[in-house]
Image (cartoon, rainbow, N blue to C red; front, top):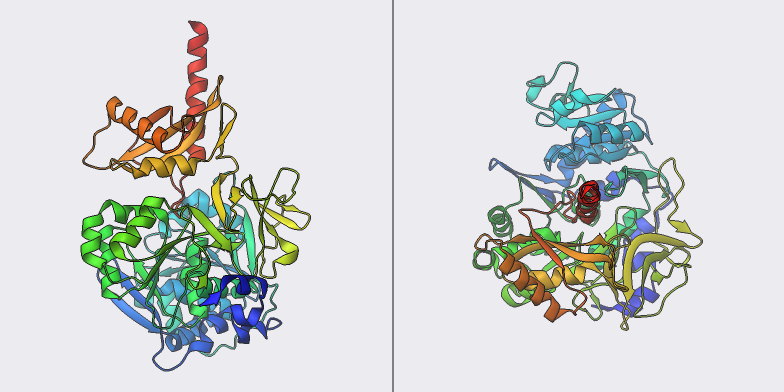
Length: 554
């Protein structure tokens, strides 16, 4: 393996990403990079399994032909290079055909997560302005409540069976259009994806992803994921969100590597079954998924031990317990990776690069990025002092975020992009995640990161998941409150709450333990698995405000 320091400081496009791609930045097409260039006889691009047990494999050659047919249909509907096409589809072959056909035309693909309701869809469609929206029969009724929807294409039976009146039939149009469609070349600055932020702190913002981001995606797959030709790769993330679309679709296909789609809900049984059936050796997913595997440790160890080579995690920091369990019980290194929709992955414990791995740290800058920690005056901080994670744009050749669509980007300050996340630089050069800027708890003059408290709680055998917030308190500014999900064999009680408090107090400190514990059945999360602490915090503030009039009356 390459030495990390050499890779980080001696960065060049050709060695880190794709030499052919780097030489053609003035004429790019995402379908060519992710499909056509790999369309060799029999080379598989997609392993697909449906929730009803149906399976199918698609080669790059098949997808090249099908993308040409779909591109011809889009062109017949007036879609032109630079226009937007939306996909409201589960993880099916039709989703991949829609994405590749959109790119072939030089158009921009916009993902719509299938768990969205009509209002969330309407907000994104109104901003992106797609010319065509592709969906399936399950999600089609949502569009009846969307104001002024675009042209709708529905995946249904052959010859238009089961298609709503006025809709186009996906497969009927595929059959009647030619497969010959010359890819439209674009420049490195032209967008090929139209993403939206998760909307956890306000209305979702739209951001175009330029074609030059392909190089960064490829670099991540090689250096952090360590995707090798002999690997069978599965990214559990949904392509309706950034991590899935960037690294379950774009990244592996750009390397000519097959990806895996499972169109079904996450369960421990289905996950283990897919890993065994497709001999998955390289796995990526969210901490939520890995915690659920840990919660069923005996079943998982018996089912998949010896299958995986490496595992990667993104979305929230991994707890030490998960890291140790994967290493001790499965014999698999599982590494933390950090990124944002706006950045892709920029801070990782890389599987393919040699550097120290500190448990609990998010890792080192991805080659092509210089990640720093800034204080409130935007000055770079030394090790040991928490601050805001930022990207030094001037010295980050793979930084691609152009800003949000139609609005100024306040996150750009001079040469820096400010992430809004609180981190700390370590002595070895790695960076530890503390929490979102608004997640950090200030109690009795101390600044406490929720992750440390959550990690300590999860170490207790009774705890499956935990979320920690700062609850407003007149004496301490904030007090630490924990929301805890218990294992099925444990019952909530005041005695257990006291036990958990003392458990954390002994492992952290006298001031960094939860003064209050509330047992809950589940925690609020984004679709990508991130805990939405702000919802819990807002809930506590609302409770306090409701109680104030009653207290005043007494």
